Image (tube, rainbow, N blue to C red):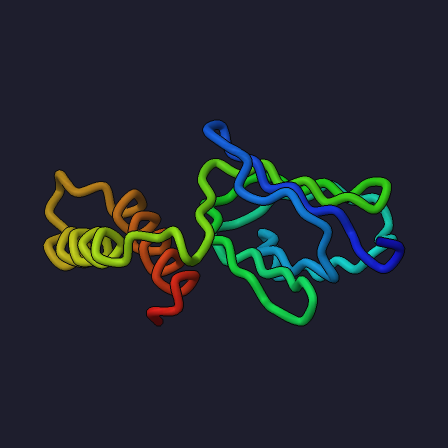
Length: 134
């Protein structure tokens, strides 16, 4: 495991990932962050986006809804509000959420919380991307 880095992705409900990986790419609030084994210590905020990591040449994807990332001692810990592996995503549910968000944004009546609708749309698009449907 000398050329690997430990990755843990944790939400309030469960541990989504707990494995040794070749590298990690995370959606930082200021852009993507690439992390290789023996990376310098780091703490940063994460945006809605796809966390990608590679194990034995295979790339895995996890849809994140924001959170925090810490790198310390050849270990990456992601504390996420919500996280789903690409293969776990209910594509139909994500598509319905996307349509609802688009409808809200199209109406833009005074009772619509535009920011909330935009965030819902970003989360739905992110989930569809992680599932390989976009």
